[in-house]
Length: 267
Image (tube, rainbow, N blue to C red; front, side, top):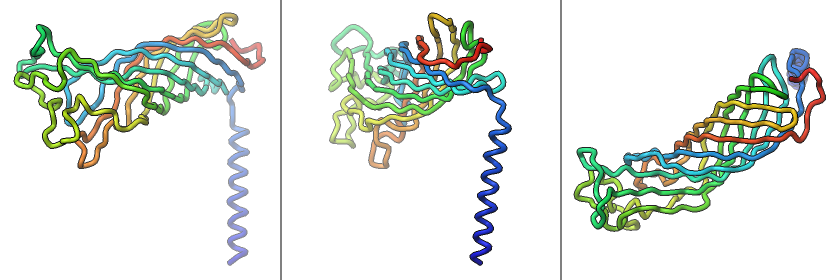
């Protein structure tokens, strides 16, 4: 029995060595070892997928940060890289306050529609697997990237043009934001602070890069983020069953080369 186990271990080890060896032999990629760093900035539109639903418009905010990129290989025509960012971002949601006829509800003490938004500041850290097609040193390159993103809550701010303790409840079609009689710890949704400080999800983007051997790399991309976590509790005792972010962002980035692969064939 012991001999059989030892023979099985030898066979497994041999199989593993053969798999690794064949993988190395079969590798047809062109080696790269290039590191670039820089800055990024842009504009982000966000809302929150609440359940029960709160009618919303997209909330606009700023985003900016630093970008790090390591290019490791060109596999056939695909340029493979890992990209990481550390960004500041303004996210949140903007409530769309309407009556049953989809007309704006007027503030009680002002001759203007009621408006409410919650601006939430985060540090966001996306990590992308990146594929590019085109020029690396001089010219244009199209790219696609996807990966996980973590966000850590910094602060939040409510912006309203009415008394959030006394909204115009009579004319509203949606009663979700009204004071919650079954939740005595809160006067209403407007008073509920963000509960879960850590946000996480999946983000992806596509864009265009222009490279110059002397000036560096200029990038434009559009990206979408889908949150997998909730900003509020979602147990049976909580009010919301779901409260996850969805963000759309456009960004401009500039990267400069720190190290390059020595290969005159790279264009």
